[in-house]
Structure formats: structure tokens, C-alpha cells
Image (cartoon, rainbow, N blue to C red; front, side, top):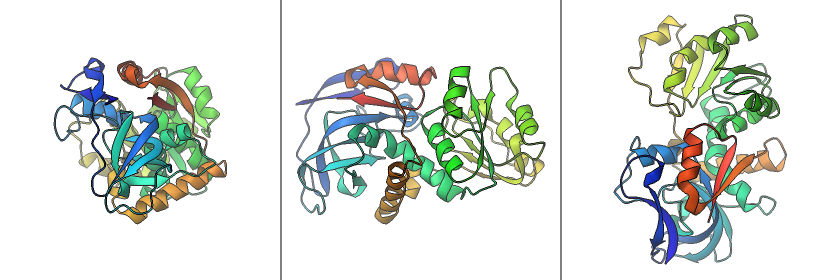
Length: 324
């Protein structure tokens, strides 16, 4: 028996229950890993509350982690006992030991420690597809990142800055503003004190942005659309403030024939070769120093409910880890 956090009923952070569970041997195509660090992400909240549907109840939440291979199942090639590995997009991460499909695992470079690996997989590969695939960020681009001091936001700011873009970000406090400026943001907007649409127009001299990366959702819609130049791109990749309801397709034409997309990491990593290419691009960005992975909070796995509470209260910045 090992310990894990399970959800027996949907609801608030209090439904996260730390308990003993049995882990079977790895099945065909699976690898069993003893986890050393587990990433906390807003997608975990979506599953806990039912915004995203888990396959059944009870379930173990969590989608990213890192650790050491303990055993491999039948038909697995390329992974061996003792290998350091990491993964994203495999629900069931809130556990000391777990089985993961080998197709989702990547080897962790020796120069990257386990905590960094656990903090970078889901958020880092999300940043990768946002700045390298959904929109190929290039020198001269002007971009807006909503909630730039969050886990994905800080990585987006760093990576976009490294690619030559002018980065504008919204934050909720002066401390978060300083953090964003230290991580690639050129301009920050205190959204609680300032109208972010007006400030974007002021900062850009009325030219507005090429792209808006919006992981906030309800609270920033439709304002994000008003920050885009004609033919600009609105990328909605999260719902931290709630799911957007009554999306108005006509608003895209009214703001200048805008483009809009709601991408997910699972689509971009569906093929093994795509997953490996994205992970390698991410690892290279970290190893060259273009991207730093800021782990600002750690919690014991048994304190997952507290971690969820703090995440939803927006008191966290950067990446947060649960430690078994």
C-alpha cells in the first residue's frame, strides 16, 4: 500500500482525501514510477469540481510529475528500472507510486533536477505550443498575457521575450508586477486598479496586440478581444476565473476580423513524435537559460487541499509542487 490523494465526490478543496491505496504491477505498455515531485495545475481544480469529467469516482487527480522507474510492464522498450522520468497529461499524479503509459513518459536530462522537471512538463509544454505552434512568436510581435505571474504566464513571458516579442502582462498586485518584470514582461498592468483595455491602448499607442494569451476566462472576456489589432489572435487556454459563457462569434468581426482558438495540450502531444519534439524544445530552452522554471511553493502531498485553496485564491505565483 502507498499513499495517494483521491476525490470521492466533486466539490471544494475539502473533497481531496489523503488515504492508503494499492498500486497493481504495471500492465502492458505501462511503467511504474516512484514519484519525487508532483506538479499542481489549474486543470486539477477543473477535474475536482467537475468542469472536466473524470472517467469515474473515486479518482486520483493530478496530471504531471517526475520520479524514478521502479518497474516496467510487458511490451515496454526504452525505459528501465532506475531511469529518471517525467510526464504530463496523465491523470492520477497525486500518489507516491503510480503507473503511467510509457508513451507519455520522457527521460529527464541529467542537468535538470526532479523538482524542476515536475514543475515544467505541463506548464512548460503548454508554453511551448502557445509560442511555437499556435502562434509563432517572432521579433516585433506585441503580445498580452493575462495573469502573467501565474505558472504558465511566467513561462510565456520568458519565452516570448527570448523570441523578441514585446510582452504586456496583467497582474493583481505590485509584488506580482515585480515578479513579471523580472521574468520577461516589458509592461505590467494592475488589473484591479487599471482598465487593462485602456492601458493596452496606451502602451501600444493605439496599435494594440498581435496575440492575447488568456488563461483567465470569464473575468477577462470580452475585454481581451478589445486588446487585439485587426486580424489578431485570441488564444483562450484556461478558465481560472470560470468558464466563458455565451461566446459571441460576431464580436470577432466587430473587433476587426479576429481569429480565436481554444487549444489543449493533449491535441499537440497526441503523437509520440510530437511529444518528444516538444519536450526536447522545452528542455533545450531550460538548459540554455532562455527559460527558468520558478518553483515558488511546495506542499506535502497530504496537504493537497491547502494547495488547491491557495491556488484558487490566487495567492500562488509561478509553479507549485506537491511532495510525496
